[in-house]
Length: 426
Image (cartoon, rainbow, N blue to C red; front, side, top):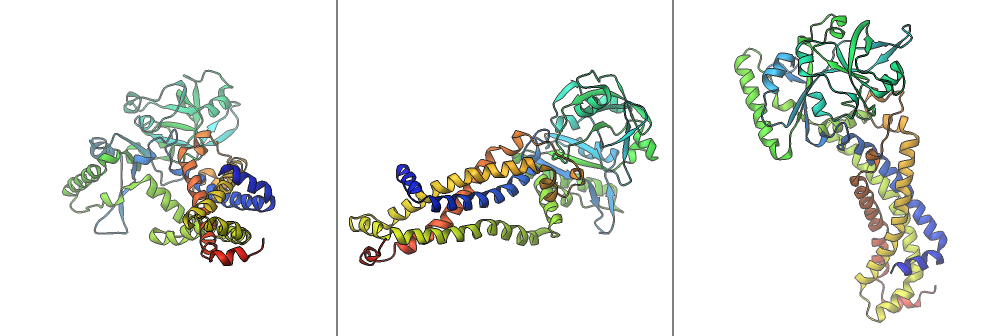
């Protein structure tokens, strides 16, 4: 069968080239979108828990939908850190004021705007960074409000020199000194929940004082890692916590369980923001776009297959006369075109990878709702674009494209009587 396909490709070079090119472009555009959102939802370091992650960042009042309560340190520690169903829990501050932080450069004269995440020690268990020097700040550092920080390798090289020891050195942020306890491999800006230049305890004296707020009053987003087998038990525990909280705060009961959202839901909502749609309406934007990417080239290639089938009808008629069944002949046509689709799919996937890497500074920004990507060239690693799911998606796209393009014309052509087919000249 493969030998016959290769012989047909040599015999009909123009047809084969056009079919492969059409498939390559369709697969490239489809896979470009698939790759972008694979990077946003796959379990990729340091965000290795995405598939099991849930978030909760505020609690709307039940009796007043215009108001809500924030999650502060006391609520975080007393209600959520004691939960039994999650495998891991962490809290990250969510600022409601201008939180631009500036780091003093090595020359002592110039400043650089840096992205600072204020969190607690559980953060480095929840997100898996690779430490190249030192270690995370500890619970003791947090409890004693020590101004300690973890910095990226990029910041370390910028301040202290490439490959130089950074542990014990001082970083000046907002005119306040912090001591470096660890250096991590610089994460990609595509890891939107975990990317930063600097991480510090939200209890540390310094940044919060420069804002004029107490760290105990900061708004916290809670992240839970919950295995699939415990999701029902997790939601039940959240409801129990909600009931316990509301029994104490009877004057202002909150809706807590309804506001817990998965990482997938958050990505879907961000996609809705890009298309100015929310909820179910988003399907009417995404589904037609994907269908067009596959259906339009499939229709074009279907015309090519139909024309080719007309030329091959005498051959098919002779095979039918000798007892070949229609499904056997249709299967052969689909197989032949699938080989061409496979060639085109591989080329299309390579084109998508090339475009994704070469134009990563704007491709991801166009399909994201994150200001962290603006004006930056994100780091793209192999695990982001060579995941097993990507190959499966590419294979599925190729198969669907092949069936749409080849099956219908073959079925229509082979319905003609043998005598009529044999009278058609090549």
